[in-house]
Image (cartoon, rainbow, N blue to C red; front, side, top):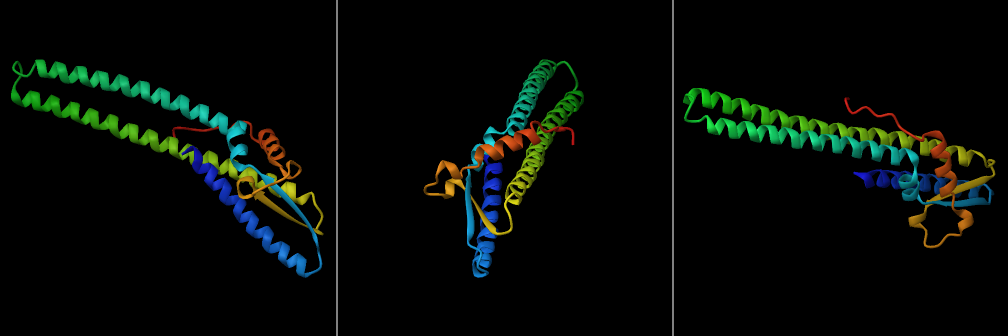
Length: 191
């Protein structure tokens, strides 16, 4: 799940690349020749961002809590089944089947709850990824807006460039701005 954000982020920049390439062709036909090219390491921005680290830590903490709860529930269920097995000859067949059914329902409820919790974590990842993506989009727009209308700007993902000078790399600029704007993301696992 971690790299699905990276894929979405990379796709975002390839879309920007297409848009800016098209704009450059239009500007070039109109006699505008100033083209500025920048590269960004989208994977590094994502993985080094404070918001991503914060989300990752919160999710790992939640997963750890859920794992502990699952182990506890499994242990309690195992003990209950063992106790029921010991009473098998001492209680009526009907009572045994009734208690066995109750334990089966309890086990099913544990399983369903675990599935819901996993879905909640997945939703938190998606929502958090959208927040980061939206903010990155705003940061890139602000970066581009600094330059006048005579310039055409092309931003490439660093992985798409065969070679690029460090002077063209805006990764740290974008990362620093992202960390200023969203150092953490509030998440709710109960949605």
